[in-house]
Image (cartoon, rainbow, N blue to C red; front, side):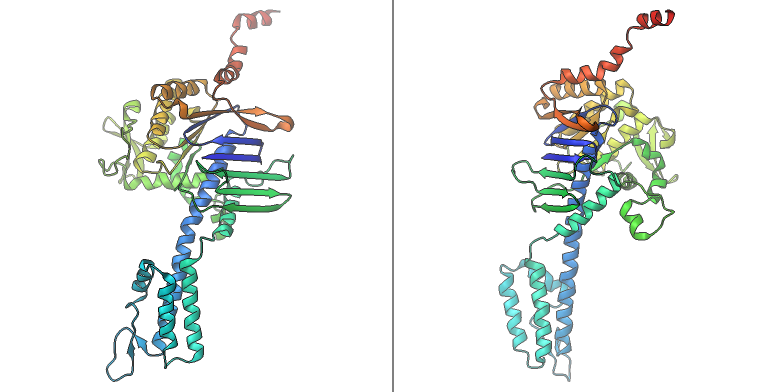
Length: 445
């Protein structure tokens, strides 16, 4: 995959490869998180509308088939003969569900519908108006079965909601009247998702070829100990629709994360009921000395160590980081079609555990999961370099660095072949304060 961004938030331009393990480096407030949130919004809008569009079409199809069957019954065509009546037995399947099932199996939908159309023409008990209504039902059934996936309008609405939830009113930057986002598949010169806004005029399009099924964005593992509170909160659209102004509002990526963590109660501690689909199962227990499970008595996720069950609130932040990985892996929330985006994982980790965390991330990528990581830690960055080389996947790791441009904007520059520049920049603050003797002399002057 490849994500191209123009004039979003403080990003002037970014062209990010997403085929493997992608590492985005930069200082605070340099647009690193923006890339992840844009990617999350694009994938989620595609996934959400695909699922909702299928449900909508199924619902419409069922509605029109039921209408056809009711009209047939009204003119004396039923599924079973009734003694003492002139009711005729319908040659159609017994009920609407069997009808839909048959419709989905036939080689030619047109021929099947033409057959029914002739049956309607031959009904001597139906008025011309009733026949017309039946044929209208038949036509709508054909549309539901044969029209192309036309979810472009709902996709635009969904993406707009997600952008509003993630960025509120700070999506485009102030120095440009245009915003552009394009997501490309691995082997396509044309984007399968495109969003362009020029001076308020918005265009969006997509190609029905995407294979991604979900995406997870992790902002912080600390949400683990306030899951109940966050479950009560609503994402932007939920608040907007329910008109509950006293209900706390959170970005959609937090709501999505919380729902996945909360869903873990159905599989944590299930003694391997949910097995990982990896060649080499990934286990974080050796690193943190225990595993997360679900305690029915406490109605809470707990960290189990040496026969002790510890609530997340009383668990070290670093342990929660590995716990989130454990839950995402065991729940199947990340895989080859469900990328992982993690924003600055080093924030809650000792340098030693930063290195261990990077090792697990490389293992996860090697198992087939696309991963996007943002960081400003030289420890974490070097660990990614080391373990990707050790695991022989370094050719599939891409590094990007946020570079300042005019007007306080940034460009994401690929630095895969020039990482020394990155380390030099990350080490610069430490270099400035290394000479303690000079500082003492300065204080004495």
